[in-house]
Length: 232
Image (cartoon, rainbow, N blue to C red; front, side, top):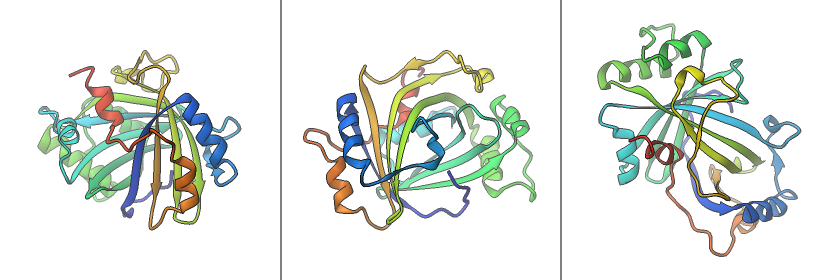
């Protein structure tokens, strides 16, 4: 969850898995990888994000059509905390992913999620100015809240992350972004989750073997698109 405005491109594989498959994968990797230190005692943390799109829903349709390259902005918090608020730009190009990230203040978040923008300034993070420019020129607006519970595992060589994302749900009330009782809608079939495998230069064979189960295949599922399709 580090902050970077010059992040490298990474590999990212996604799989749809059942709860039984998630538990099997967990039993396989717990002796090979370590839990992300941000997960705490429970081994999980909650992720809640606001995603942006324009009037033509360009980000949604680019993802559905497999447009390359493509990118989308989001604002993200962890465990409903306002202490650290991330503005992120996720870009996908030739099968690789890049995530640019900076911190914004609660006051900046309030202005943006209310449909406004932060005036462009040399004192702002470059990424925040990029979002403001997109709001002004493309009509970018907050569209949907995406939320899920993540179980993260890491391996330092190759900067490998395996995450098991459960209870994927969507919400639309931006005014209740920090509300613990935010009304939401489940977007995956009962008992289905998403596993993501990410790495930099290499993925060790023993980790690939541990997460490879018969019958599961890579998917291009986007949590944003899963949540948006119910509101389009």
